[in-house]
Every structure is written in structure tokens, then in C-alpha cells.
Image (cartoon, rainbow, N blue to C red; front, side, top):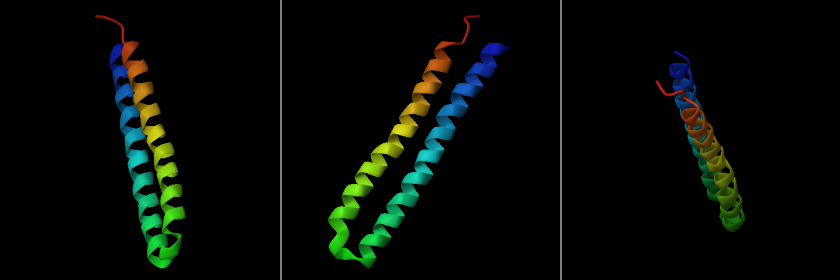
Length: 78
């Protein structure tokens, strides 16, 4: 029974991290495209900031995957 709860927690951590990172990346990209549309001469600065922000958001998804894998390895053998 404990193994089932650990498996559920692992799946939930991966799913929530991926979902949160996906929504954050979508909002950041939309905001960057809007900023570039409004002020095209700042496209280089906006693009650089966007790439750094997307990398940090992707790190959140990777941390969620890492937590899920660590939880999965803690499931007791039946």
C-alpha cells in the first residue's frame, strides 16, 4: 500500500512540475513576443532575457523529474 502512494507521489511531482513549467514558458514567450512586437529595436535584449528565463523554467521541470525518479526508487519491492 505504501508503494502505491509513493508511485502516486512520484507521478504527481512529475506531472505538476511539467504542467507548471509549460504554462510559465507559454506566458513568458507570449509576453516576449508582445514586447518585440511593440518595440522591435529591443528584440535582441528581449530574446536574451527570454532564453535565460526559459532555461530556468525548464530547470523546474527537470527538478520535478528528479524528485519523481528519487521517489520511484524508494518504492519497496513486493
